Amino acid sequence: MFARDSYVNMLAKWQDKHVIKVATGMRRVGKSTVFMLYIKYLHSVGVSDNNIIYINLEDMANEQLCEYHNLHKYILDKVNNNERFYIFIDEIQQCSGFERAIDSLFLNENLDIYITGSNAYFLSGELATYLSGRYVTIHITPLSFDEYLTFCGFDKNDVAANTYSLLFRKYLYKGQLPYIPFLGDDEQTLQGYLEGVYNTVIMKDIAARCDITDINLLNRIVRTMVSNIGSPISVKRITDTLISAGRKISGNTVQRYVQALCDSYIFYEVPRFDIRGNECLKTNGKYYLVDTGLRQIMFGGKNDDFGHIVENIIYLELRRRYNEVYIGKYDDNEIDFVVRSDDGVEYYQICSTIVDEQTRLRELSPLKMIRDNYPKYILTLDDIHFGDLSGIQHCNIIQWLLCNS
Image 1 (tube, rainbow, N blue to C red):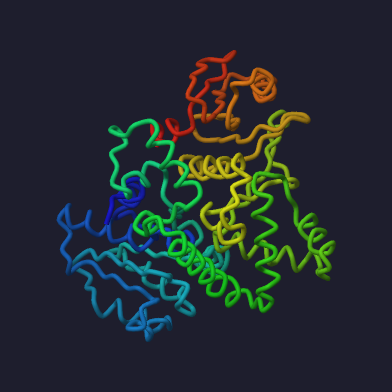
Image 2: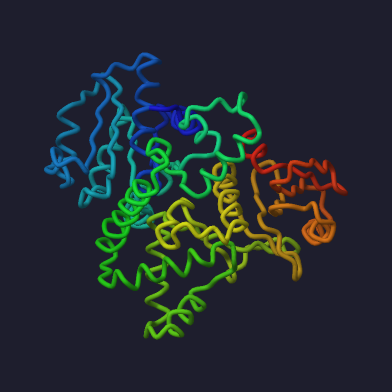
């Protein structure tokens, strides 16, 4: 297991705090591995293996625990009131009525509870009702570029520039799921793996849970959303696209399918933020894909959307670093990303290159219109460093991904 220290550190920060730790994220992003790494950390700080209970509810050996009374009894039979126990339950949504079991276990202050789930339904449903204010969410994404280098066996401090560029393109097109670096360069193997992940999510986390029977329609909606990565898109536009292709469909049905895709973390919906008005807007947001390698399933080796794929990568990295990420709007101008944190606001513009002066002026113009003093960045793949551009910092994307991780 390769280290994913950022997530282990997040869990360690909440160790022994009387809140339930909920790790979320799409299937195969490494939630179980993060738990294993954290358990290893617990061992390192003196926690006995006897005080750690790990249950994977997708393991058929635990099938009887997919009923909440059985799960509750199983855990209570293994603990006592004189010691602290660490409870890890993987894919908790497999247990019908799990909210009741977790709610009851939470009454035992000597239990430190950690659970994972591959969709957001259990966070928006009764878990939120039963445990309002009593849990924290740690969202796990596929590998950052820094982690990807480690998984590929490279030291980021000892890699030639041309090697960085090659690895970055592999990272973009092959995908960021943790198992990808171990599959080698065989395209057929990679395609088979990604199709397996995608189909599992579609069937297990969407179709079964949302009572969706029209898988063909669901796949067509995915293709439409993927082809519009980085562009404003609405449910109405998706609906109109399908109708124009000869499909009779209502906007309500499309809305339900899109919500299911977001709840299963295949897509992230990013709302627009009106910078001048300092408010979040309800229309013309964007959707970004959890792993750009999944795009290969729909469009094969066509790499004609390079700029938007890079933008997708930047969004995922910003999401790792900040709680709030938006598409920026300033009058009629768009800022690629606005992030908000306790430290204030930052603005990001993404462009493959700004070597051409006209391109540079066009990309900088929206940032220059913002009159506040918050940091402004333009991220490109240019090897030339432009430095400070009228108060706007230019950064190379690869260096930014590595130096700020």
